[in-house]
Amino acid sequence: MGERAPNQVEAGVWVVVLGELSVFTLFFTTFLYYRALSIDLFHASSATLSQTLGLLNTLILLGSSWFVATAVNALREVDRRRRALPHLAGALCCGAAFVAVKVFEYGRAFREGVNVLTDEFYMFYFMLTGIHLLHLVVGMALLGAMALHLRSALATDAEVSETLVGFSSCFWHMLDLVWIILFPLLYLLH
Amino acid sequence: MTRLFFLTWLFLSLASLLSWWLDASMQGVWVGTAVLFVAFFKARMVLMVFMEVRDATPLLRWVCEAWLGIACTAVIATYWFAPFSLPG
Amino acid sequence: MSTTQPASNLCPRQRSSHRIAVWCGTLFTIGLPLGWGILASFLLPPISPSATPQEVAAFVTEGGILQKLGLMMALACVGGLLPMSAVLGDQMRRMEGARPIWAQTQLACATLTVWLVSAALVFFAAAAFRADRNPELIQLLNDLGWLTFITPVSMIVFWMCAVGAAILSDRGEPSVMPRWVGYLSIWAALLSAPGFAAVLFHNGPFAWSGLLALWIPLLIFIVWWITLTVYLLKAIREEAGISER
Picture 1: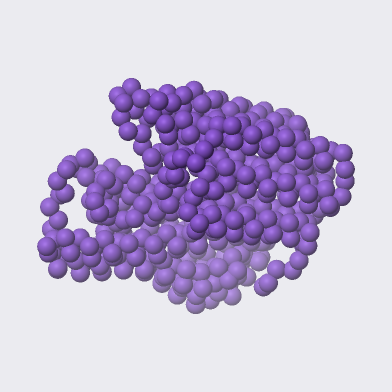
Picture 2: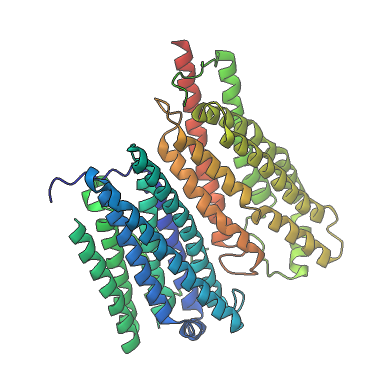
């Protein structure tokens, strides 16, 4: 401890991260506002969601964040750089698992005849999780790009792009952070 | 460092299980508030540890703390007081 | 990845035309909200997608000559985006070097934006053109106008991403624009995306009159445009400085 490499993420990354977080905060408060307008409906519809699946996805994303954090940490030390790749692969698998659970959840809702137009709760549920999922796919693409870049950089002993690593990892943690708040809002509040 | 990440991950997972259990076993606006507080505390840990804000410049640290404060207040205030009449 | 900076040849005469072209963007960003939004009162407040045909017809009838003037003003102003995007493309070419794909994407997206916004305005104008026609037809034109305006977000998203990609790929010293502007563009792209969901909703925040489909993308576009204007003018100034040396 003590001689850790300084935080090397460039300042611009935080324009995206804090910008996204601010807008998601706006989404959260908008959701809570509409929820208060028709609280019974929101309770009834929210009760139909599977809390277990929501919890499962929370744990999956937390695991993926751990993978990404350890991968970035491994990159800081030259002799441990090689360890970053399997950790990134782990993060990508977690991302894929998240998408799979979400698709299963959506599929079940559609089979039960529930969709984005059913009521206001489901509008928020599908839109907020959908927007998050869209971001997650972008995040997975970024992690994938990072993994490919890393593989070729390791093969040729080249420098690793700080921009790609910093942006991809911060973006991924931000997705985790957003889901951490989205999960209680949509699945837990009763 | 790796150890810290592991402990953070463990803590975050346990906190998720805790809020899930809290919600399943109890009712009331205080449970909801507690669950939201736990969520923002978890968010703070992700920011500080995984995103390494605690090692960042003071400016960035303060901006992140400010966002956490504002977001947490806004969300919990809306949870408690909505529907209020919006201006205009 | 050319090590030698391409010869900068922005002479003083060109510098003023580049500046004028950047300011043309103001026509779009001020003229459109002012003409369409305020004079024609489409933003005061926006008419809800759940309004009945009669309500829509009443809105158009009450708009009268002022609404038509506002739409005319907006139609006259939208083209201002094109000269600005030409300058933006020119600077992006400096960032990208020899084979500038993002600069070309950018120009195409700006062109399509102008085209689609004009189309939306024409639909509104067609509604105002014969305000006494069947209210359901007025509603149809109103729907067409709003949906054309709000839902084709794809090229806006690609536009912003292209600008972001070019800024972040700039390896020159000093860089043409600060890197955070690139990140801002990417953020703006992510924020503009929810507009397409306006196809689904008749009310709420994701409907065309809602916070997340209309107001936030509109606001973020203005923020993005102000930032680009400031840094384009700065880039032109600095480029001229380099060529005088």
